[in-house]
Image (cartoon, rainbow, N blue to C red; front, top):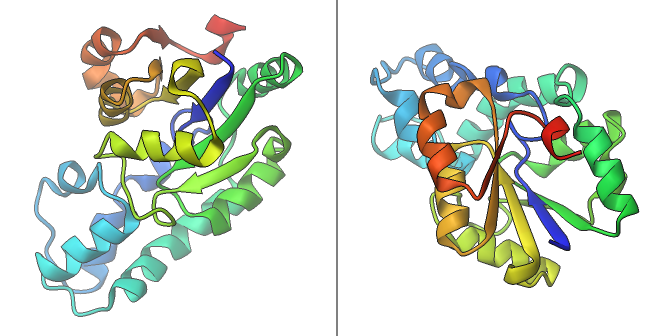
Length: 210
């Protein structure tokens, strides 16, 4: 494969723990009793979709922009200062760049805190673009987002691999027709067997493909 499309959270960076209870805590803080299955409901949603759900389905009296700003305020600070790269990712990026691979990031996180994170981790120079769900108004609950990312980059599908950690990302990138590499993350332990069956390749870490 000549081109790589990387998910960010849980794939390249060890960030999934930061998201635990963020939506729940935000709703409680603002006087809303969240449903017990909140994490399952918003797991595949973009920021905008989650905000709309909080407002339209749970009755949160805020604008969509206010919800997004409130939820991301805490998260953004963690990205700027705390979150670390996953093992062997930098080694793999160095090797891939040396071998002429073209690479981009496709993420549900927001560019204004993702780009400082990539710069802090000294891996920003490996990616030609950071494509966010919000800027193209799509989420990873649709397989079409992978086609859109490839089109933006000028990648041929037959020459492109997608790296994902989450089950829905693996399923939808595979459904879109891309060679799919599933990367282990502890947040997806319960889905491990289905992820392995779905992906073209499953790795415990990037050491497996160095």
